[in-house]
Image (cartoon, rainbow, N blue to C red; front, side):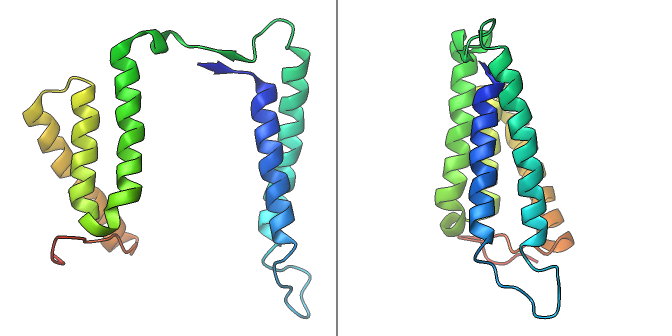
Amino acid sequence: MKISDAVFGAVFLLLSLLVLWTIRSYPTIPGQNVGPAAFPGAIAVGLAVCSLLLLQKGWRERASTAWFERGAWTRQPRQVIAFAVTVGALLLYVVASERVGFLIVAVVMLSAMMLSLRVRLVPALLVALGTSFVIHIAFYKGLRVPLPWGLLPVLY
C-alpha cells in the first residue's frame, strides 16, 4: 500500500504541533535554562521541519501519484488474513496481558501469527515458547521492565 508523502507529512505535522502544545504545561526548573520540555520540544521542532518537507514533496508529486494506492498484497486473501491476525494479536496483548500475563499472551500471539503465515504447528509452538521466554528474561531480568505475570506464579 502506498500513501502519499503529503498525507504522512500532514499527520506528522499534526503530531509535532500536538507535542509542542503539550509541553507548554511542563514545569520549569528554577535557575536552569533547560527543563523537562527541552528534549521533546527539540524533537517536535525537528519532526515539524521534516513534516513540512514531506508535505512539499507530496504536494509537488500530487499530479503524478494517487493519494492512496493499494498494494498487491491486499489482493491476496492469505496476506490480508496475516495482517488482520497481527493487528488482532496486538489488540489481544493490550486487552489481556495484565490479567493473563505476558508469557501466555506472547505465546498465543506468536503462534497465531506464525500459523497465519502457514508455519507448521509444532515448529510454531516451539519457536513461540522459546522466543517468548527469551524476550521475557531479557526485559524482566536484563532491562528490569516489570512485565505482568498474570495467571502464572512468579517463576524467577
